Length: 146
Ligand SMILES: [Cu+2]
Image (cartoon, rainbow, N blue to C red; front, side, top):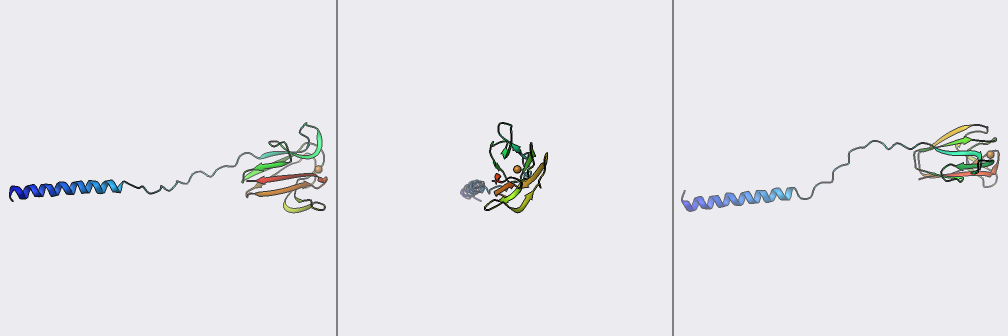
């Protein structure tokens, strides 16, 4: 092998090395999107408390009072429970609407009583109206599940 041939061979090897490095660079270019690892299932928060039979002023009154909104509308995230706590009187929490008289829709019904605690979990988003079957249209509430 002549010096010229050796030089040519060295140049080819060098070129090959540069090309290889270049190829390596392109290989590290766009990265595939990593698949997110399965994390822990988000745990729903504590139940939302709705007072039954008490006003915002703490007086006995025929209404539902959400302890966060201070109104009869309860807004929660899916998977959360609502806990109704009776503070005075005889009432129920009964899902359904009062178009002409109140009609239960069967989602939940505590039954009528005093001093009760009743819990219902809302796994899916939606708007869930309810009423007290003693006081009817006078005592209604809504649970909005987001
Ligand atoms: Cu009532």
